Image (cartoon, rainbow, N blue to C red; front, side, top):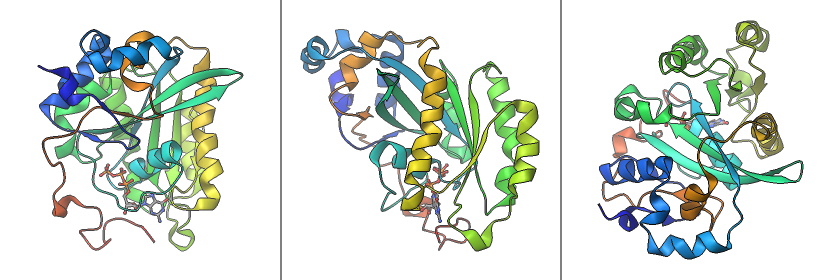
Length: 267
Ligand SMILES: Nc1nc2c(ncn2[C@@H]2O[C@H](COP(=O)(O)OP(=O)(O)OP(=O)(O)O)[C@@H](O)[C@H]2O)c(=O)[nH]1
């Protein structure tokens, strides 16, 4: 396969939902990409190598995983959202105690039909997990054991940092999940709980703080991927794109706004 076809740089994230993207992902994770792309080789020579940490973001569909990761990596609320198919992949370089590290955010699909084929990829070499629920939808909180179990099923160590995020706090009149209930749930798992809003600009610092909390926890742990191999394909911008997908991932019926907002809150 010609890797240079599917590896590219962008300031936006892209969907990993086709065989080219899968293959590219495998190359990156196995550290072979830099041997195959001419365009990336010049980047290798000038870039400082940074530790990379993989964080998966999981939870029910529509809880705001994409918006949260977009907020952290791009500094804004996305103008338009779509149901994630497979995984969205975003990355940001942050500084912790004088050291630059990369947080690689894997924004996974909440809908079962869009995640089946990629689940095994999500759970490989994970350094931290962000569980997300929607404070306005009790079912998304009640479903958290399902996501926690999925982590166990994929042999994720209970010792890796995990946090729980209640999103959509801007919908003040619609809050259905009480924080004390969440805290009670999270305590046995030793998970810190945060409530925030990806949408509310006033909460932007809070979203930042949530991911930086993880960054601090991760800084002194061991990155699994060799930095050189990954930097070779990613370091020109803050965000990596692994595909220019030849497949359109999105149909209008999958759009988050397609149901007229019935199932999701974007108030
Ligand atoms: N009011 C409000 N709406 C939000 C917030 N975050 C996300 N949304 C809306 O919630 C809907 C779903 O957001 P996404 O980020 O795509 O949800 P997701 O969890 O990634 O969904 P999947 O990709 O299907 O797993 C969209 O209509 C967003 O505009 C928030 O903080 N406040």
